[in-house]
Length: 156
Image (cartoon, rainbow, N blue to C red):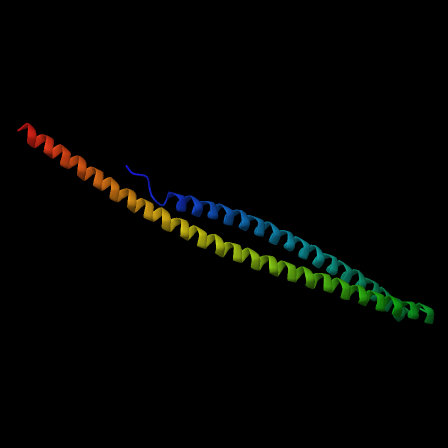
């Protein structure tokens, strides 16, 4: 049987599928890493908010009991300002982590689309190869039958 004429194209398409698969795997790893960074940032922020809330609650209870002096209140205001600045910084870290995770998710979707396209292109060539092989196989069978028929006619 003759060699499939589009075999080089089939090999190129197969290689592109493999490359797209590797790119998707890399994109998935990067998205997962970005998601871990985001989760870590969220946990840090939640922990800081809970700690600040506990301190505020304790300070309010002490104020209610009359245990604080003016200097304690002044230090409390300074602490509150610093805590608010830390919360803003942590919120910014979370925002950047969310943006990085969203970008990684977009790159993953893009890699999935590229892989789908590459697979479709490879399947197109594979389908053509199957039809080409079938056509040539049928032709070979027809030639064999014809040769067999001719041989049988000659024997009579």
